[in-house]
Length: 324
Image: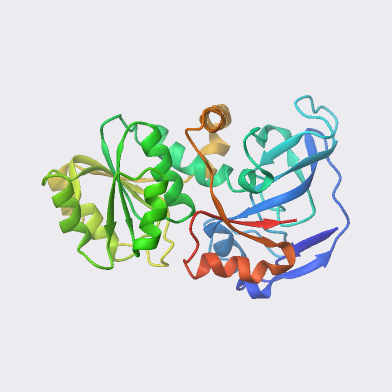
């Protein structure tokens, strides 16, 4: 089988497409013929050796897939050969075949294609966990989403709206804001043209927002923090711009605000039943047409350099997926 291999930490260009023996499912595992695999910003960090958890090379990256079960190991009761599934393996998704523990597999929702399914799990699960467990988002609250057209930001817009919140989408261009509006954003802020803080103040009548969802980091972080309302919550999702912000503690004090880190992967490992429930609820929202995952760019596996560039150059809207 073909597999994309990280033989040494470096940029996406340093990856190699190689021939490997197909893996075999062990007890409790399923062998999935991968049809599509989602690319996420953490993948860039993993292959460069900059992620919070390092995997020693050589390894096959990729933590999100959709495909067809080819075989099952001993003790597998939830799936059989021929089932269409989505899964979040701990690596190995950027290959023609991947073994996955059955407890992190879910049936592919009927309304999703393989490409949509491959881009569904991590970004939607991150945003849903952020709004459900990290902060109990209430209907009628106002959420400011930074990077609102990106892979995870766009899901935050969609989920917050589905949960009954008012959504202010912030992005760097009118084109990207239109993409966020189609996902359900109520108000739009182009922070390349206006002050983010001033725009939020005007849109909220001076009150500020209840929640900030920030997968971007960088220089906008302080403006967003200062845009919080009394008892506001700032969700730290990631640092897509490459710069980790330094928060002034006095702003949190004056607003009695909370700065909350959101790391879905580790939370899901520590709370498997809750993580499974979250995914079932998300799948039900898809079936009810409350969520409509959008894949805007697909690339065959051998065009992985171009696919990763869509992420590193921060030009992707929605989800970028490798088809296999």
